[in-house]
Length: 313
Image (cartoon, rainbow, N blue to C red; front, side, top):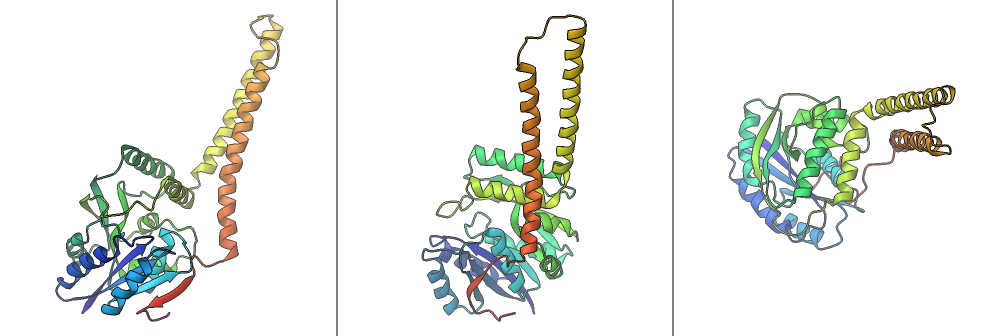
C-alpha cells in the first residue's frame, strides 16, 4: 500500500492546530488504498501548540511530531519534515488552512498521472492586503528577472512531490534554503494546480514584512549571481559619468563657457554617486560572503529537542 506524508510547520498555532489536524485526518482517511502520516514540526512555539500536538499524537499514531529547541524558521521546519518522511508522495502545507487540505486528493490524481511535482498556484488570495499582493507580485518579477531558474509566479510552499524528488532535495547540503526555488531547480515533471487561496482560519500571519524580506533575500541570493554583475555594470557606469563630467569641466574652462557654478557642487554630486555605488556593491558582495561563511561553519540548520512517534535516523 502506498503512503502519503503531510508536512505541517507550526509556529504559535494553538488556535488552529486542532482544526488543521481534523481537516487533514478527514481528508486522508477517505483516500482509498493509501496509508498516511502527518508530521507536525513545532518551530519553537512557546504557547500551547506543542501540548495540543502531543495530545493528538497520543490518540493517533499516524501523527508524528518534531519539536525544535527554538525558532529556526519556516524553511528549516519544512526541511526537517522532508528528512523524516516515509511516504511515496509528500505534501507540504501550512497550518493556517489558507491552502485547503481538501485539495490533496486532486493533487494525488495528478501525481498518479506521472507528474512528480504538483505545485499550488493561487488564482486569488482572500484576506490579504493590497500591500501584500503588490509586494508578492514585485518579489516574483524581481526573482525571475535575476534568477537563472524560472520560479512559477503566485506559488508558495504548498505542493505535492514525489519521493525521489524529496531524496534529491535532502541530498543538497546548503543552508539558507529557499525550497520553492529548489523544487524548480531540480527539474523533473512539474505541473501547476490552480486553486483559490482562503483567509486564515484563525490567528495572525507568522510572516510579517521582516520575514518576507528575509525570504526574498534567500530567494535572490541563492539562485543568482546577477546582483554581482549589476554591481559591475554600476561601477562602469559611475566611471563613465565621472569621465563625462571631467571632460565637460575641462571644455567649460578651455572655452570660457562660464556655465559652471564655482564651488563644490559637481565634486559632491560625483563623490556621493560613487560613494553610493561602493556601499551598494559592498552590501551585495557581503551577502554572498556571509552565505559562504554560514556554509563553512557547518552548523546544523536546526536542533531537535524531542520527537514523538518518529523512528530516529
